[in-house]
Length: 142
Image 1 (cartoon, rainbow, N blue to C red):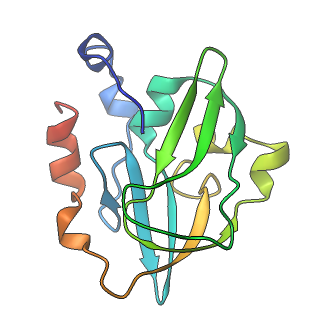
Image 2: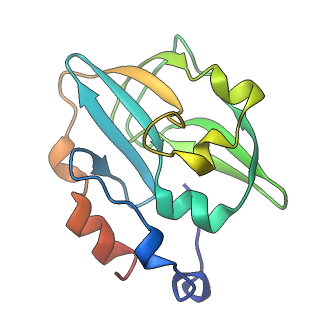
């Protein structure tokens, strides 16, 4: 999602971080949670913490079919705008409408009310290429 310099990695509040075991993670700091034949995608607790206060979420890809690694939207914080990427390919079914009025939900509850999009994953989606919670912790040096 966003390049996070090593200097930021040293400023983690690790005891406040949340790493659910029932989701998969990307090296770009997105997560995906499959529920039946749909999946929810968002950014990780680590990413929202490093970005700071989210002021706007822009997703213009509802109805589009995207590939893994494609940009599906952007997140705006006070000092920057960051692309957000698809963890797997699939059709974007909807965006989280609550974020239009409350983008801070991504900061408050990144794995729950702060989800970004809901997709129908490609049947050939490669979940094995994604990280589990332990792999993601290693990625961010925890």
